[in-house]
Amino acid sequence: MRYLAIDFPMKHVPELDPGFIPFGVWMDAYLEGAKQPLAIAVERDQGRVSVRHTFIHGTLEMARADYRYVERMVKFLLWSIGGFRVYICGCSPIAKELQQDYSLTGKRAFDFDFFHKLYEVDLEIIDLPLEACPAPNEISQPLGGHLDGCRIGFDAGGSDRKVSAVIDGECVYSEEVVWFPKLNPDPNYQYNEILTAFRTAASKMPRVDAIGVSSAGTFIGNAPMISSIFYKVPRDRWDEVKTCFDRAAAEIGDVPIVMGLNTGNIMGLAMGTSEAVGYVDADKNVKGWISELAFAPVDLSEDAMQDEWSTDFGVGCKYFSQDAVIKLAPRAGIDLDPELSPAEKLKVVQKLMAEDDPRAVKVFRDIGVYLAYTVVLYSHFYDIEHLMLMGRVMSGKGGDIILDTCTAVLKEEYPELARKWARP
Image (tube, rainbow, N blue to C red; front, side):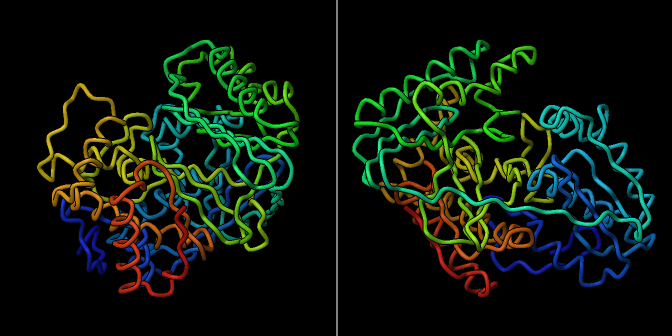
């Protein structure tokens, strides 16, 4: 295949989405002929700086491809690492164009606004010579890793909230409750629902030693700075949002983060209402990155589906969530009632999959192809030895097809990446 004067190999084309251009595969082909050094440094809170050294072509003929590569790279770095200051070191024309795009009125206005809200300062793109690139300043932090005692696990999803009570590693109670956080502008609604879940789980145990929380959104510490479950809450009430989990936990006990696997270099990818990603390194530490890969680019096709929230095209949430199933189903000949909710539409396709309907097979097989080539991309930024796939989309026969297809593609084209896979 060919895109922006770059030929790139791709043996497995999604049947229902033949225009798919995987960023990671294209990137590898693009870099083969690139010789002009470039560095991108991303600064975030507490003076942390991540630096990526790379190359561009630097010729007039490749100018469009150069900018496409660097712009998508900056986008991916922002949504994987997080940051409020990006240094482009070694190419002033690209830096100046990025300054226009990543502004309040530019093409990436959503990103500008998001990171302003996250860090409460304006996002800056700074032009520097290569030799002036800032030095890296990274940190990793250990997770709890404890399953002993009496613990609460809580997951705040966009469509339902889940809570479990666990005693010495054994689940003694679990519930899933439908809620409507995206529709409520009063943060007391979310707070009361969270507190109710905590109290319900606590009532099933003699005591509570710790609470582990998983939630849609981007956090600094325990504070949700951006979160879809507080989508309707006005910004002037965000101080209540930032303390929501801490206040609810204070009614019960401490709130450490809990690890469930005794291993490292693991990426957890949940395909549900959206795409959610977590990662721990070889030492079982978190890197302090936001890993909001739902908004990171995976597809370079100019005909890729647009994300209605971020307004960008080809970002992860449209490939690894119920939206991917809903997008592909009509292309496979599956009619979905427009009156159904997204979750209900997913259930329709999964019911067909349970009946081995060949149309549904095509849908989940294509998501497996998406995943395989996106693992190539993610592996440029994360050292992945284990990939754990979760979420509603991964349930049932459809999840089996996604996993089997992904594994088969990687074994054929990227055997070094097809190491170990985990799926609960």
